[in-house]
Length: 300
Image (tube, rainbow, N blue to C red; front, top):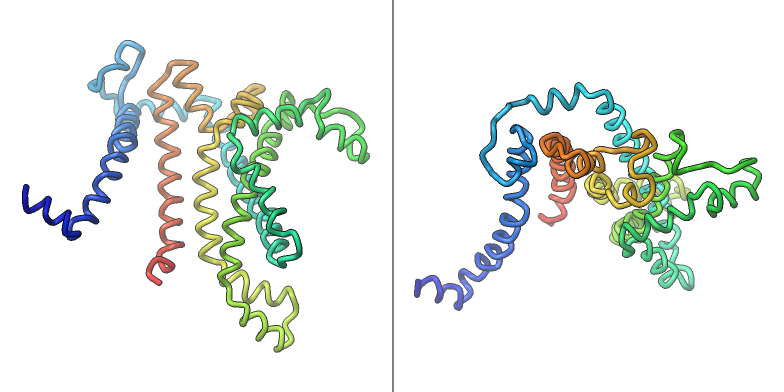
């Protein structure tokens, strides 16, 4: 024990002590619940057996029953639409804003800071704001659409099955655009300006410089952003709870909200854990993409 303490004091084992403390914290508060959730997806669980660790093992029965339910595939389809549309929308608008502020015009710094308001706001607050914006009777969005002549009447974004999911998608794009803008701005600032000056001297126009310099140099940043976007979007719960509650008739329901609904509204904890495990697989895949995208940057 004296040797271990002396190594920590001397600095030889200080790095191990620094890693051991947060690792213990992660294993206790994240690792054990994760293992418990995965194990629960292979067990028969009810309210009476929820407090025990050992329950009847049913194998893949929960997974088979889940995919046999008629609402499963529409909800997973909604999840795919929500994830893809949110990531693409956030990336395109965020990249456009990053390029816009990259010109460094007067007042760009404080104006860019205003865009961060959406990212630092709690999800439930953002959901409450967009709940008012998307209101069918007095919503701001319907007012703008009517005044611009794009629509003749009100669109009930929250209660119409044709629009409910897209209403949450619009809110989530607004919520995550500033995060995309900041990360992409960091990637743009890392590109040497000499490359653009040399390309401009060679006669390359703006599109050619963007296609041959900006996009290739931003490849790792874009890959990391896509992976983080997938992880954050699959975790998005607050907007659905504040705007649509997954309705009407599951038209805006997605996997992350459905997992909570199965567990804490229908008390089918095994099915809720099963949906969570399926989502964990996609999060792990996104994490692999993120690590591979940033690996060479760490080495450098």
